[in-house]
Length: 247
Image (cartoon, helix red, strand yellow):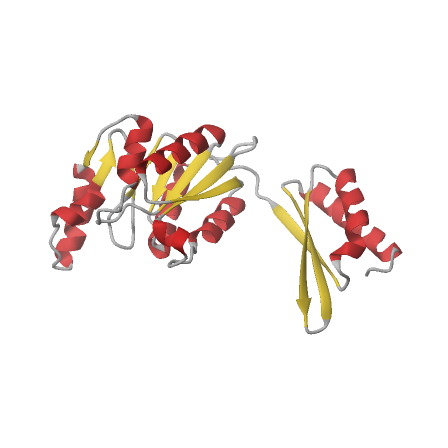
């Protein structure tokens, strides 16, 4: 469902393995790109350890600040998978094995000749009142409650859940973007670019420098849901850069 208002989101990454550096996060970029494509503005990302009090505090802070909160990690079968219990605590509801989740998992596990052990049934535990999010990879579902969407940490599974959850989201205007690449260091164009941003406060602008074998490279990126306004900002910036012989 589309919406003309500003729709915002945060991502909460849960896991000691991310904070220790043992596992490199691959989910933030995927979620950010997906939300951008459907008109939801990602405003904040946090990472917390596998600690119930830390997870609860972060969930309660972020879910009231933004339209949506997406969490990843901590819904597996082991003792350190604490997300379901933490979400239940944040919402003040009990957490137990959900027959709907078991029904999703049972045929898939049976077809693979895998027993639904007590450890695996931990993945069927969800807070009371939650809606399940299908998992097209391994069947163990994620869930949503209120404006919080709880997704797996494994990238392929997370992406499957994110796609499945999208139909429940209010979406906004797609953000359009254009880029201008210069061969100058960004310090040389900083004043001009700042003045241009002031002239177009409704168009988001960013400068991204790098170094290549050919020398300096600065990419100027302009973003807006209003295509006409974006094109006006781009044309004006190109003219100003050309006048200063930066193009």
